[in-house]
Length: 324
Image 1 (cartoon, rainbow, N blue to C red):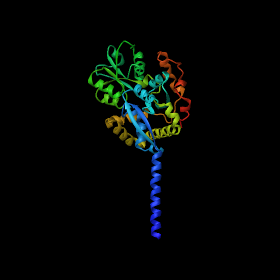
Image 2: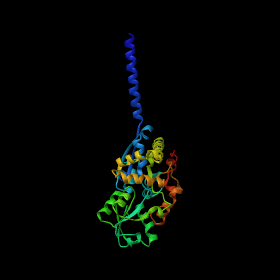
Image 3: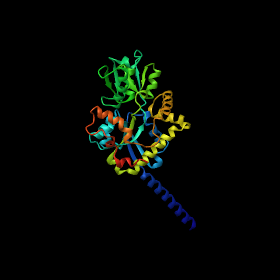
Image 4: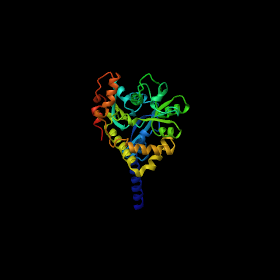
């Protein structure tokens, strides 16, 4: 009789454990994130968070998708195909200005890590007169960045021709093929360009010091329905940032991005050291009107905004309150 009772008790304990595991699994919620391009170093803390379980520990499953441009990212997040989207700040600002149900959520990178690379016979930015340059898009932030580099070097609109590709790998491929004379690139492609013998024409950080580069935008309806999930996601993301900045994790961090991007390890090693020197990722979740002021002013001065050039318009107060 005692053995029978013991077996019944064991069976009950096993059943309760299974139910508890199922309950814990059922609590996990999915966050759908759409990125500009696949395997970008800009999303390094996101990949770290997935790889190291920083989201799983908060009962979050991450579904990652990518498109070829930030404008397409914002279209998909606005339409509900994604919950969050990443990319240059100009596209979500334009989308919100036109009535999209988005809010800027947090900065992803503080400093634009771009440099300008040209064919071997192009020695400086002034030498791009009459040449073909590839940037992200006609209204992409990379065009603004290129113009910030061109004007001080005596080049104005019309002195060069522009063509477009929404991601750095696509722009580097155009430079490699000889289809363009210069391309604006970020690591690790910029390090690959150096190794391949292309001319470094300029470092964007020498020209742009007042504009953060990329950020996360949220579908406002989704965010308001999942405030705790948004906060937990940001906590996991910035645990990834802190882990990235711990130099003891350098080799594993490089392993993670090599696996995500398919880039050559030496290029990713250089990218890690470059990003550390720039302190490119914010230490905590942040999105303030002050951080957006320069970008919004540039767009407003160019006549690209229908509404007022007020940075507060692009941050929903309810969504902003979800920052940890």
